[in-house]
Image (cartoon, rainbow, N blue to C red; front, side, top):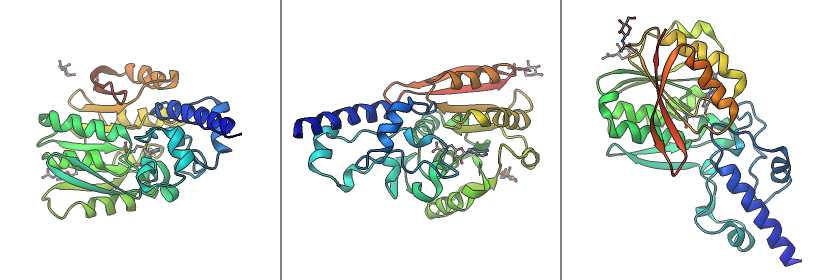
Length: 281
Ligand SMILES: C[S@@+](CC[C@H](N)C(=O)[O-])C[C@H]1O[C@@H](n2cnc3c(N)ncnc32)[C@H](O)[C@@H]1O
Ligand SMILES: *[C@@H]1O[C@H](CO)[C@@H](O)[C@H](O)[C@H]1NC(C)=O
Ligand SMILES: *[C@@H]1O[C@H](CO)[C@@H](O)[C@H](O)[C@H]1NC(C)=O
């Protein structure tokens, strides 16, 4: 019986790893979903059914440092092994500052946790600060606003945007990190599905978006939003995400009708790409 248990744990660990590898794509086979939903120990997909989460539970859940096979069997709960999205507080050292982010996955879902794409894009901006320094930057689907806050730290005038429901958490996160900074950053509602929101924003120099290509139903709205904000080739758009599934490529092909797309960075470890997108028509 213990052998069978270990075997099951090994299968779940393997599936977990597979799911960990999924980011912007988020699709997975329904078989593995079923196993996850029925597994109380790992509890990866049980939170998904709230209005923010869509099917994103599978995303970016990082494997614990120690082998899951043994750790789960021997130590059912250990704070250090809580999955990143379930941590209530995370800290990131970027651009010489410590950013503290309170996460609230259970109530707010995907908008209230930091995704790897946000960290990769923030690191990219730190290495290429001329892209944002002194510029008007607008962040789409900012979530906790980590990338926008890093851009503001680098000297950009930043507007982080989100859906209505995510705004108060986003503002609270900015306030929490404002103490030691004199920066220009504000949060505003910009829902891709509400075209009337789009005209509230002046044309930015730079639009950033981390992990925003993730729900197929929003692709047309997201495209319309980007088109209405980036009216000419003077706005540069930087999108970070993991392209794994056909539907993500589908979004890039939609973009390609109006924009020129260049891959400018690839984080091989986290398998996340950054695309620079500029209007071509
Ligand atoms: C996967 S999260 C990424 C969050 C953050 N950029 C990060 O990388 O940590 C996707 C974000 O897109 C936002 N989003 C989804 N649909 C949206 C819409 N219609 N309008 C505005 N934001 C939306 C969600 O609220 C969520 O915060
Ligand atoms: C910063 O951006 C906001 C929003 O676009 C704008 O209203 C404000 O004038 C800008 N501030 C500076 C100093 O450019
Ligand atoms: C940007 O657009 C303008 C006018 O549409 C055009 O003259 C210019 O060559 C374009 N610049 C680049 C870098 O494509």
